[in-house]
Each structure stands twice: as C-alpha cells, then as structure tokens.
Amino acid sequence: MLKKLALGLALCGALLAGAGSAGAQQGRQLAPVDPSAGFGVGEGAMQPAEAAAQVELAAKALSQIAPQRPGVVDAYVLSVSFYNDPVFEKEASEAAAILGRRYDAAERTIILSAGRGANVARTYASASPNNFNAALGKIAATMDLNEDLLVLFMTSHGSQDGTVAIMEKGRMQGGLRPLQLRLALQQAGIRNKVVIVSACFSGNFIPPFISDPGATILTAAAADKTSFGCEPSRDWTFFGDALFNHAMRGGQGLNEAYRDALTLISGWEADLHKQWEAMPPAQKKNSPEPEPSNPQNNLGDNVIPLVEKAEAYGLAVNCAGHLGFALDRARSGRPLKGLADMQVIQTSKAAVDARAMSEGATRKRSSQDVAKAIAVTSASTAQLFSAQPADVTSRAARCAAPPTD
Image 1 (spheres, rainbow, N blue to C red):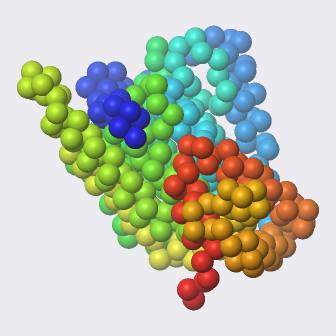
Image 2: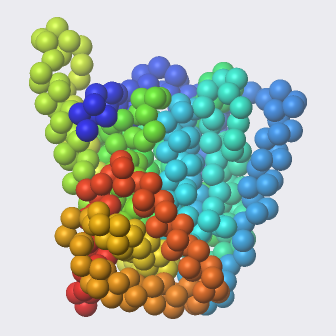
Image 3: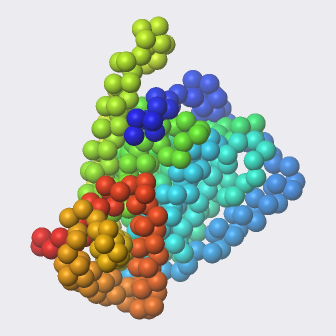
C-alpha cells in the first residue's frame, strides 16, 4: 500500500492555482448575468471532424438510455469527469461500471468526460455544460420522477469556494458551483438523487441540498479540506478508490459502504502523513503538511428507502457471485480463510441465489439473466482476488453470515 500511496501527496485542488482557477474565473466572467440561465464556460470550437464525432458520441449516449420500468425503482447513472487529467476519466468510467452493476443500471448509464489531454482520441462525449444538462434532461424525460433515482458522480479538481473545475486544455475552461448544480437539477425536474463528488473542498456541495429530503450527498472532503490522489498516472483518487474500487464492490448498502470507505481513507491519509514526517527538512518545507480530508455526507430522508430498493438486486447478485467464488475455492482445496465448510457456503449461496432471483423477477429479469449476472460477478471476483485478497475474503464471509434482521 505504501508504494501505491507514494504518489498520493498531490492534492485534488493543487492545480487550481494555475489553469484550474483561471478556468473557474473565466467561466464566471463569461457566464450569463441571469443565474437562471445556468452555468457556463469559456469554450473554443473543436475542429470540424472532432466536432462531428462529438455530436455522434453525445447522441449515442443519450439515445441508448433504456426506458423506466413501472413499479420498479430504476436508477439512472450519470458519471462525469470534468477535468482532462487521465485519472479522472479512468475513475468516471470505472465508477460508472460499478454503479451500473450495483443499481442494475448498465442500460441506464451515461458517461461524460473532459478527455485525457490534447491530441488523445476521445472515448466519451465531452463534459461540457450543454452535454451535462442534456444528459440531465434526457434522464428526467425518461425516468419516473416520483419513483426513480438519479445517481450522479462527478470527479475533478476543486477550489475553495466549492467550484468543480471544468477543463479541456486549450479549448474549454470553467467550473460548476454547488448552487448551479442544484439549479440544473431543479430545472430538469429531478426529485430523487444521490450526488457523489470527488474533489477538493467538495463539502461545499452539502449546504445547497441540506433541506432537500430528495437528495443524498457524499463528498470526498469537507468544505475547507483538500482530498488526495489526483496524479494523472493513478487509476483512482483516494476517495474513488476507497468508495468504488473497494467498499462498493461488497454486498452492503450504500451507507455502510461509505462508512467502510472512510476507514480506508483515514488509514491511507495517516500513511501519507508518516511519509511527510519522514521527509528531509528542506523537502518538507516545500510540501504542505497533509491534513485529513474529512469526507462529508448528508442523507435525504426520501431517498434512503429508494436507494435500498434500487440496490437490492445488485447486492444480492454481488453476494451470490462472491459465494460462488468462495465455493469454487473450497472445492479446489484452496478455501478462503474462514470459509472451508462447503455445506455452510452452499446453504448461504442458495439463500442469496433465491433472493437474487426474486429481486430479478421484480425487475423483469429472466432466471437466465440473473444466473448470467451471478456468473459474471463470480468471474470478476476471481480476477479481483489477486489484488484484493483480504477484501474479497471479508466480503464473502459477510455474505455467508446469517441475516441479522
């Protein structure tokens, strides 16, 4: 883990002293006077061929969103990388995949990205204000506004006033402020939402939604704190790694996963501080002392039961997949620690399989669909085991434990 954290001292707001803050300032200067018009950026036109490709990417992303299912709490996932450092696109795309599995939302997921730098081929539609609002508008027009749920994830650098930086180097600079996000969601008519923000000072996104029972907000840092792990070479920021790559791969609900992520982040940041303390005095003088990011959350009363319903199928499939992997290991004579009794694993797996089938049926999933989802999860768990053996073992053991309620 220390090798992994060696590059983690970069703050997720560190670049805002240069291009990021200039982008936020330019965005504020160019934004319309009328605040009801929404947020804006300073943006230059793409070259014709790139512009045409971008229009097609955006149209494809929006047109492929599946319709809502009456009587089902459908989740619609919008995952956005607002800054063109590669780490943010990697995080947005991987988080979208994990959220898609958890919320049975693979067919209801949109990814927008600022790309991975100049002259790098684009995979996703640009994270421009128009595309962002278009995604919200398409989701709002497709979902049942009373029954369904938006899960919005945003990753970028952040500034002290809470602005999330929007940056495509050489073409677009600006920012999205917390109040502007609230306005965009209100204009779209989206009532029920989970908003997850991975950026420095992202705790600023909580106050605008504090009185909204239809909003759950999870942030990477307090309003006055930085977050860590934004080096372009990384696959995840600290917050994204802890929440998505570790905690949300398990079979517990969102709130429990968030608490697990906080424990991981606290440990990683403690290691960072030890590294800082071990620096030579001259190097330490030029490196800010890392302080805990202190992630924040606020849970909307109306959203809590919707989240539980939306993730019930995905969590059952997740546990069935983990127990399938544990059973394969036990059969091969290489059991996971504490999971050597095949009868116990089989009994637990049968119960979880039945729960997955029942939840799948309410979501119009055939038994073949559910079985395939479980098999895919089991195979991905086997691949993940080499990188996260303790995590996988802990998740499987949790899934094998008898229900407490």
